[in-house]
Image (cartoon, rainbow, N blue to C red; front, side):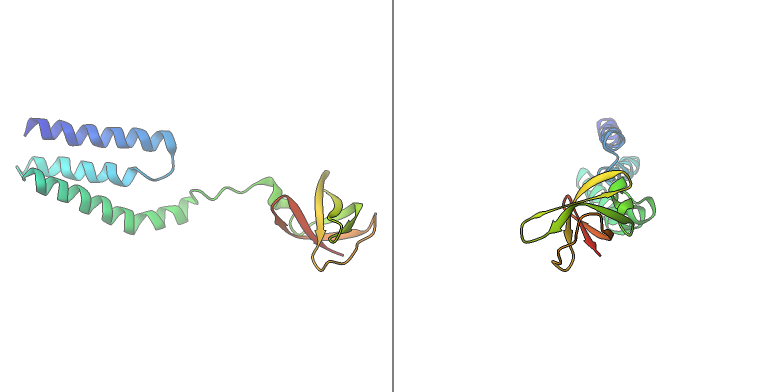
Length: 142
């Protein structure tokens, strides 16, 4: 029993350290599963039952709590400053011509490659509205 106590506790600590290093909410559920398995070692459950508790608790936590935690902590949802240009007005610094794959705009002090939303040619110095970002290009409309 002594070896199993240490084994499950060591597994839980290692998984918690990995979670702390990555902050991706991937191993924390298994760390809790290992803690649950560690607790059942004190009830003298068999090795197979301990593994079953580990798998069951880890799986249930993964299925039922991960979506809630991701929703409220917004894990993995990184916004960039680039998204701030959507909806802003921009000035055309190079004529926008989708067919010839050219066009640039200046928005919030930055120059971006731009394409017209409806393939319309947009003249130099026109004011356009940024609709969205596709790759590294702004999609704009006059």
